[in-house]
Length: 397
Image 1 (tube, rainbow, N blue to C red):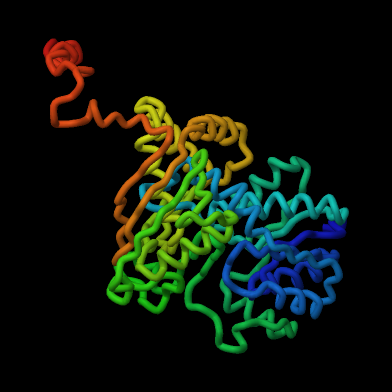
Image 2 (cartoon, rainbow, N blue to C red; image 1 turned 180 degrees about the horizontal axis):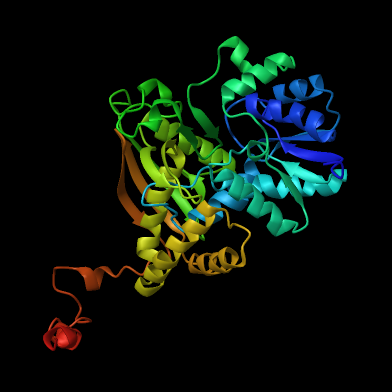
């Protein structure tokens, strides 16, 4: 352990990472650099500075990365219409590449020897952090305390924190009964009663969305303008990516939109029950599919959908910086060159109802689609030959 002199720690100021900071100082006898990112988790990050200083930490990085997160990670991902196992919009998964990237950069800036994180040995996040770090710096050293230390539960961490006089929120009774992760795209909840997949979550658990019963009784109609697959305007107003997503979060939360409760297949081979709130992202996903429906050729759209199942799994499993994800991204981005226009939706009682879509690049042909008399472009008798040719293999089995 002596070869490690300085470690960059992904630090929230919470119980786990506060204990890790002290544990690294004691066990590795190393200097700790803390990195705290504001990616829209909805809580102050500055208190992390005081907690780090109280442990004698000198190099403290606290950075606002919300715009970079949404612009360079969330928006590119949403061009694919990501949906892991049919329901999960990858809110935790997509944050890890950004954090890994910045930690590797801080290692270089500070001359550190390693990075450390608070992800457990049972979860996906350890995989995502470390695959990202190794992709960017193959020689980097990684310390994962949950795979090394003798602690078996968070009760053990509380005892350690009190023994070493580490300031923790447990002492003020603020601790949630759930294991949570949050950023501007989503909030996730695991553990506690959720470990029994039959038990319904308490309504008080949900922090960002109202229940359908308590949501607004008045529907909202909004317009979203897309350019090359990304939203650029909400109700004709230009906003930065992070501000736009934040506004969509507020609108969706008010109308009970964005909750899912799933049992998912973790990459490490464990089934896990999780509840997720992705309010603005749920609107984004619905509206993006609507604008694609009138601007993309059928075969290109279907090819993209087939490939994006693989793309989604790559992100979920932690392969954002892999050559295959980057290659798929090129195809996805190229497919979005004409995905521009306006989508109008109604938000009401947990529902997102598409009311209209229009685009200067629309390939929807009303004259071809009409049930009324058309201009003669389409001869309905031609369908007979098309059907007979395609039925040959079915008629000759």
